[in-house]
Image (cartoon, rainbow, N blue to C red; front, side, top):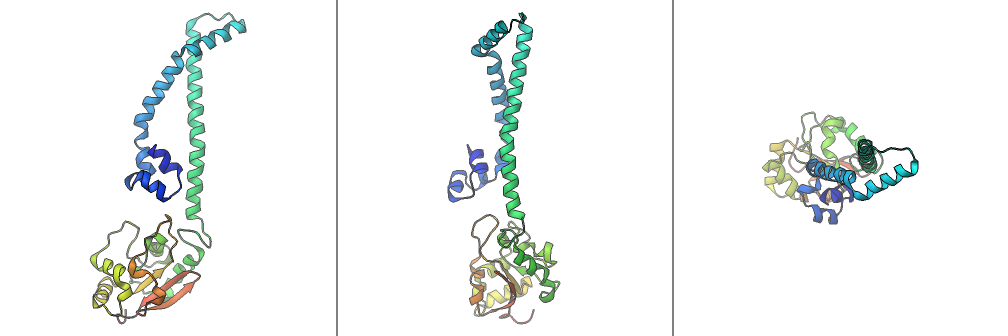
Length: 247
């Protein structure tokens, strides 16, 4: 049941409640399926081959055909062949819909458009212009769930988190939590200097997984007096932290 829910249900609160954190990954559950599926398949094949109703059905078919087939060995062979065909058809039919759905879902995450969840066309344009404003050795702050961490791959500027599970240092956590107070909290500037992170990517609230993981300090950057807008295109914005002096 867990595999059906995590593979077939859209990402939602209901799915999270039913599957929890660990079982939200369908591949973890899929790895356990063969242990049960092989046993169930064996039981199913055995049932088909020894089902009295099917045996009687075969006998009636053989009598009506007038073929004169009487040998039980041939009847058994036909039963096994039928079972194999049924199993093969079930496997193929069961996989087609799931595979197509996975391809469709993956394509929707990676296709480039104005509102694509991983990287939008506006965000890609910002990445491609990073070299104009951001020094080569700078470390970019941003919410990795919005695709901001791809600045390293697409803009040749390293991000503080290379992916959503990257290690977050205490200084980086300080920035994430309190950048909104950078103008009046010296601890934030110490963290900014330590991380050499004077630039912030703001790609809005659209996340690739459909959640909301915006750090408190990165919310409402447009109202933060300690940062300055450097570049923007659509909803994608690049800010420079000015409250901590020169980078």
